[in-house]
Length: 422
Ligand code: AMP
Ligand code: GLY
Image (cartoon, rainbow, N blue to C red; front, side):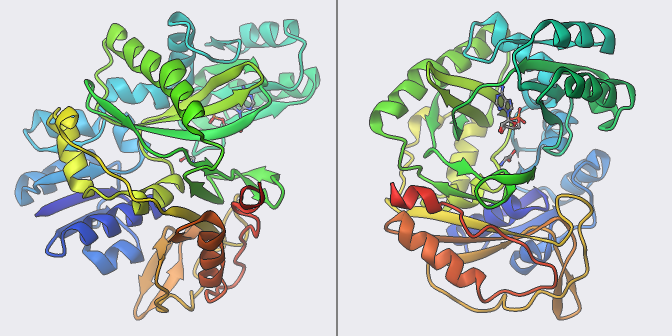
């Protein structure tokens, strides 16, 4: 089988690893990939958003399937372009990808269908945003740039002054560029956050184990927000009762509303949920697997990944029996010095070759430099381990982390720590 994989992060290396495990004869091409995907196949000199280049490559090389990892090409319409050219591809179309690409669109959608979400509204100009913000006097207040902002577009303001300043920075100064053409303002909801991944072909669906990200840079959830510093799955707090509530109060109403709205979603829907005192509330939709959540979900799959991807694409997910193993997985992200600001790059990474059963080091911001692997981005590695329980998986992950060294490396020592004690 020949597969084109689009993307270059830890999520994509995990997808590549899983596809290769399921099919040792796989011919894998990754655009643009990283040093990890380069060890499993061929990296192409094509950016993930170079739609013309990707279509041209696929027309010539005719992969059996193209798999899209990140949101940017999905929002830019890569699936529509491939389908128009008769090329098989996994992922939602551009109309469905708006659920991640526009927070105003999503807020309006959630409110229209009475889905659980924080009270709030969307704005196209800074003066109406400002008026709304000053009228709603519960703080903190959550301010979100409308478009894609690499996970940085959400700001929690603690005072009217900070809120006003943030509106100015997002909409007038455009600190997030065009992502700030519009914005959402909503109430802050306290509660426990969780990542709900739903695989759907638009007709049937199944919910993957509940996972949890660690978004803050520092231990004890302190410091600035990041793309995610670690994750684990399945979350022990996700009891059968909680799963039933997620299905009945969130997933089924959401998928029903997609159908009513004419959103044909085929792919992986990631629902960012917060569990408040009065139940679940939807913080966001992502239209692809989370990073680093994908790194802890794929080791739990028993069914070959490619079978799931193809069943979704061909709308026959209802006929596929998806099975999971009983493992628990933990991933610890190793980030570059300077991250989440400007990362230091070019550091030589030592300790990658060691084999430790039950672990895998997924590359993110890495590249091959001769025989060496060097850092090339903010999140550098995602060190993943799986075992029969979370405490063991966590111990293994940190054992593997301890063998890896590069200048400036930073990671959290408390990924999945609290939960193994509960
Ligand atoms: P988002 O990209 O919309 O998920 O927002 C990024 C992060 O900001 C979330 O993971 C939450 O930690 C936080 N957040 C967003 N909206 C809210 C809210 N209404 N209440 C509390 N925290 C929020
Ligand atoms: N882990 C957060 C994200 O993938 O958006």
